[in-house]
Amino acid sequence: MLKKCYFVLIKSLNHIFNLSLSTCIFPNIWKKCFIISIYKSVDRNNARNYQPIAKFLIFLKMFEVIISKTTQTHPTQ
Image (cartoon, one colour):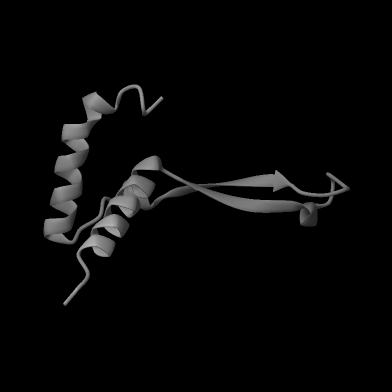
């Protein structure tokens, strides 16, 4: 869904990303995650048979990719 409407969000996200980088402040809401349990084996009634998975907001992943690519292309001297 995000791919279909990126052209609407791109300017705002660019502004937020640049502001975050220039001020060294990251939006707290993007740091939050949702924990879901994924069933992994035999007995569904046993809590040990579930794997916790953290789902972060897509904006955090996008920011991480941008930072990663930037630091790889422009290493610190």
